[in-house]
Amino acid sequence: MTSTTDIVARLWNLCHVLRDDGITYHQYVTELTYLLFLKMAAETGSEQHLPANWRWADLKGRSGLDQLEFYRKLLIHLGSTEASPRVQAIYANAQTSLSKATNLSTLVTSIDALDWYSAKAEGLGDLYEGLLEKNAGEKKSGAGQYFTPRPLIDCMVSLMKPKAGEIVSDPAAGTLGFIIRADAWIKAETDDHWTLKTQQQEFQKKKAFYAIELVPDARRLALMNAMLHDLEIEVYLGDTLSPLGANVPASDLILTNPPFGTKKGGGTPSRDDFTFVTSNKQLAFLQHIYRNLKPGGRAAVVLPDNVLFEDNVGQKIRADLMDKCRLHTILRLPTGIFYAAGVKTNVLFFQKGQGKGGDVGQTKEIWIYDARTNMPSFGKRTPFGVEHLKGFMEAYGADPNGLSERKDAGETGRWRRFGREEIRKRGDNLDVTWLRDESGGGDAELREPEEIAAEILELLRVATEEMQGLVEVLDNGVEA
Image (cartoon, rainbow, N blue to C red; front, side):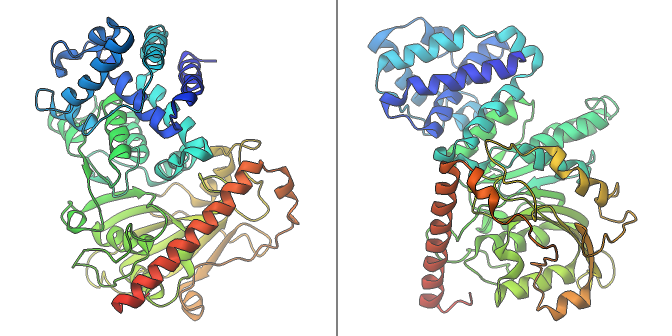
C-alpha cells in the first residue's frame, strides 16, 4: 500500500468516529477540506495566503470547547476579505457540521499525525482525489453525481488528446476531474511545460481551462483540487444554462458529464441564445456544448440514454447536432459505474463543422461501441477499471476526431457503423442496439443490496423529476 492510499484509508476511517455527531459522508469530506487546507498550507510553506493567527498551529494549539469555538470563528474569518481570493472562495459561507469538541480534537490530532512527508512526495492532489473517490463510492453520500469514474475520465482524455494552447472547458465541473486529467495529459506531453515558451506556460497555468459548477460545496472541492494540482483556474459558481454560460469563451475541447434530471426548481434554461427550449437538463447542456465549440473544436460528453431517444425537441436537438457537428462515435457505457446503478449512460464524441457549409450535414456516419450488453454488473464486487474500456479505445484509434481507419465488427461484434440516412430513417433515434443479451439477468443476484436499493431510488427520482418537468412544460406551454 502506498503512503497516499494509506492516508486516504486512515482519513476515511475517521468518518465512522463522527457518525454519532450526525455527520454525513459529504459533510465529512467538506469538513476535511477545511482542515486539510490548513494543514497542507502549513506542510507546503504556503501559509502566506492565510491571515496571521488563523492557521493550523493556532487551531492545533487549542483544546476542548475553546478549540471548537475558535474553529467556528476561523471558518468565518477565512471566508472574509483578509484572506486571499482563493482562500475566500474555498471558505465561502463555510460552517462546521461538528457539534462535539471531542470529534474536532480527534480530527485535528489524527490529521496532524499522518505521514505528510511521504504524502507530499507522492502528490497531495492524488491524496485529495482519493478522498473524493471514496466519497463518491458511498451510495448514501449522493456525491457520485459530482464525480465521474476516473477510468472513464482517463479514457476520454487520452482519446481527445488535449494540446497546449487550447481552451479546454467543463460546463458542469463537479470536483474538476476532467480539467485535472486534461492538465496532467498536457504536462506529460510538454515535460511539465518545460518545452513551452514562458508566455505559453503562463497561458496553460492561468487561461487554458474554464469551469462552471452550480453547487457551492462541489465548487469548494473543485477549488481545493485545483490548488493541490497547481492550477490557478477560476471555477465559476453559477448555472451554465443561464446567461453565464452564454458568455464563456468558445472552446477547442469540451470534456464534461452534465448533471442528470430536469432543471433544478423546474422551468427551462434562462438562455436566450438556445434554438430549442426544453426542461430536459441534458438536452439543454448538449445545446450549450456544441454551440460553445470553436469551428473544428471537439467534445466528449457523458449523457444518459434518454438524450439518444427522446422525441419532439429531443429529436430536433439531435438533428441539429448532427448538422452542425460530425457526431462520429458513441460509446454505450456499462451499467453500475455511476453513483446510481439505474442510470444508463453513453459518451458522445463529436467535432464541430468548419468552413463553408459548416452548419449543415456534417455527420455522414456514426460508429457505436456497445460496452454494456453482456458485461459484468459493476459495483463493489466488480470494480470498474480502464481495462474494461481497452477494446473501445483500440477500436476508436489514435486520431482524436475519429478519423483513424475503422472496421465494422458485424452483428456479433461490439463495434458497428451506421450511415446518416439509416439513422434518419430511425427518426434520429441514436439508441441503437444489436447484440443479444445473454446474461439472463443472473448478475442481479450478485449485486449488493444497497446497489439494488440505490437503483430503485434513482429510477423513482428520475421519474419524479420527469413528471415535474412535464407539469412545468404543460403549465408554460413549452414543447417537451
